Length: 496
Image (cartoon, rainbow, N blue to C red; front, side, top):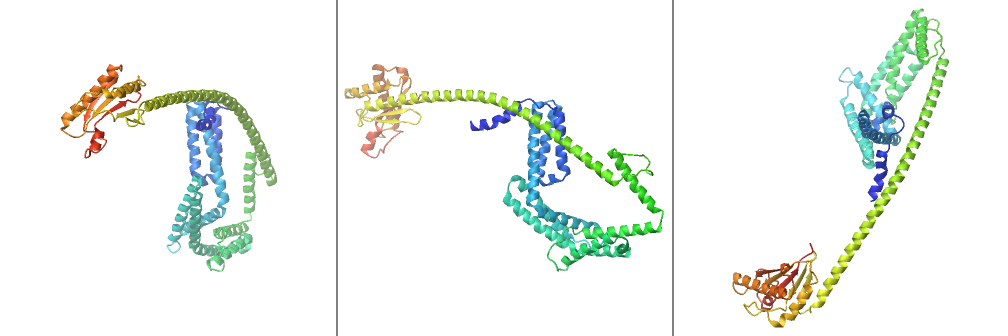
């Protein structure tokens, strides 16, 4: 019952009509939300959940093509749920493992830079790539266990990844320092100290930081270690360009016109073009920036209005759901009440049957003395009346008149169960041959059956069986045991 109450809102959501916006528009909006999430690379930190969101969105697209609006809304709801879960998982992973992510970025870039710059076997170190591969494997396991909620293993894999990234960095930095020294030296030879002093000095500062760690002077891993190499190369390139500009005096105008053409193209895209002639265009950078900010503000306003519109539609949709839920809940309560009433009635009837049966059993127990019979009530509802006091003369099947009172009470007991069949089972000890014993036991059972029929019990209810010596209840090695085995058992069958 509790499970039904929990799933009822979901069932109602599937039965409700779609929102006012068309299904295709809603699918497109969800697709854009998913694409936006994937563009900022956060999906890399929640790959499994993002994949599930894509699968649900695919189901929504298929349902939209088949014009199955209810299935569209159900699939979109699951898409939104998984997308929200992916965003939460990614943000939470970023927050908890920020240092690991920075270390991973630096290690990957350092190893990739070394590999791409390696022209000789001496510069290439396969150990660094090996450490990086091991670190990435541990990092992937950390992501997977985090999405499954296995936080203990997540921390263990994150620690393993951190150690391997550090080893990859340590294996890469000596070669990176060599490349950087060569790049800074080439920049100096190109006149970077004179023509690009700011970039050149920044390259030297980063090189000092790099070399200090490699030489063991500092134990702190440098951040952005590849920037030293990039700055050294940039200083060389710009120094050579500046020297070219100084040699060719007309080149200054070319660079100015190149900058103007770019700003003109940018202004055209932004809708603030004043002239189509790049020679006359002079759109200021300030004006471009102000226009961009204005457009951003307008876009933010539109997004806000869109969210408010969506919120209004959701509120309206929620009211419809609540109305339907209320009606369904009332119907469910009525059904539940009917079921409870039926269960109560069935329980009452069962209790009455059990009470009636108990009374019949107690009445039968009161009809016989303990030394006359043993009465056993089986789990299936059948009853065994063992007439231990009913005896026959040796090899005889005639009933002595002194047992008529006992059999009369047996007849009264059987009349308490007019709806059930009766088995009269005869048994002997093991004295004599098997076949004669079986015949004798059957005759004794038939004698009891004939007596009961004569006293008024319907014959179709009575069945006589002779088992002879094959079902003893005591040892035949002693007189007492053999006396117990010579018996008549009355079995009142279980109710059908």
